[in-house]
Image (cartoon, rainbow, N blue to C red):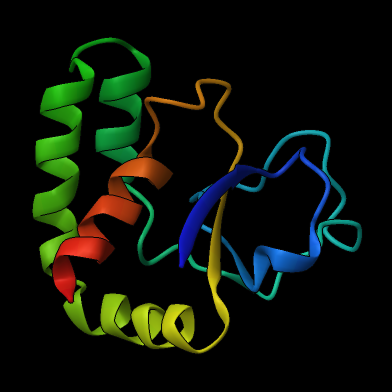
Length: 115
């Protein structure tokens, strides 16, 4: 099972392995207070892609397409997380305000298609 949650939401027993998938550490969160197992910058969008999306140069559909292209170069890392997801569940943590249109959702879909 793969799920996505904001870093500001309280951890739950069914979260499984919790991975922060942001390139930058989330504002207002102390490193020692975030319940996470890993900070994976490898699977985060590139800085240029993240900035293009935040500056509204790219809409979400175009951002998603470019991000998936970036993720295709990280297949082995994706497979590693899929193995963890199968064993104990996986929660992708993100700081974005928009719960429907964010990179963690794109990553979760990409991982689902990697199987």
